Length: 67
Image (tube, rainbow, N blue to C red; front, side):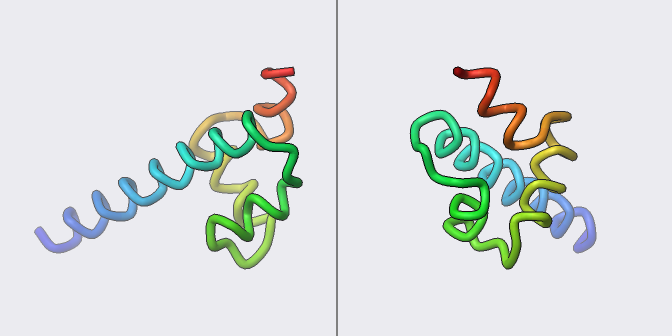
């Protein structure tokens, strides 16, 4: 049961991070690295990997779809 709760908590955190990332990608001109840093990632590669895993698009692809 604890593992299920931890998994759900991690999923929730990831969902909220992706929501915030999408907002920052579409409403600012911040670089991917700056957004990653704002969201607490140590490097932009980790951020990009999570973003692509959750959205099937890289942060750059996502941003480009709104321009």
